[in-house]
Image (cartoon, rainbow, N blue to C red; front, side, top):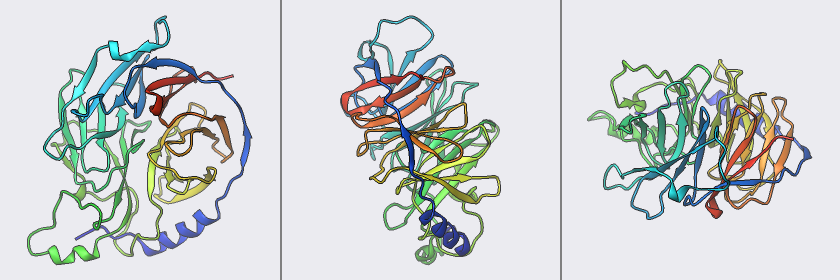
Length: 335
């Protein structure tokens, strides 16, 4: 038993992706400023009010993740040594030792949602530090920005299905195991209302995804999505491993609108700016920060960073980047 994507959708999207090249419109050289040090391999960032939340794997390898907070509304002597500040250490949930690689914040409540990197589960961390299993049934949740809260307070996430690599925790009913060879292979996008009345954990393997829709076809021709952002327009923006950016509208049809420079994109983070632009952190192989306008123009904000991972922006338009290889957080002030 498995999800079946429309064959027509796969073919049309494949053609659109090949034709969606967008040249870089320009380049600017904003000089990064170090604002925090002492955080081991920071992976993800998010702003919550006037504080910056940082997710890292922890220094000693004995935790699923560690949460740091950097206040943004006080005059601090920079850079702040986060190793000397309080943090939340999140233990491994079981013997699998799954690490946390994605982060989203519900802005009104301050609740954190944390995804297992290349895993099948999403966890919820309350403001009083209670950790609850929120969702199961995923297949291969990417590291980077694979979770996001949209403008209506819904949790959107991207999953990738390939039963030959990783199967869902939700097994088919007894007697139907022989149909697993016909399982869907390709991306899934979910958009979940954060209704407190829904019993937990939510079993996503039993829900119809927001994308793709339908129950026929394959999925192997669809690109592999590795990052997601939610601009105020209400659309979702998806990034593929080839550097294609696609806009997913209410009708559930992805439409390519920009392409990043050629390169190997892995564990990529994105965030939507207040002006509708998308800020993209280049990850391990590409040490640049890109800005993509709503009409698809791509500029380089800065380059030469050492493994830029998580990215976030505050109400003043300041961009924060996790420079993971140097164990620090930098910021880019708007000109």
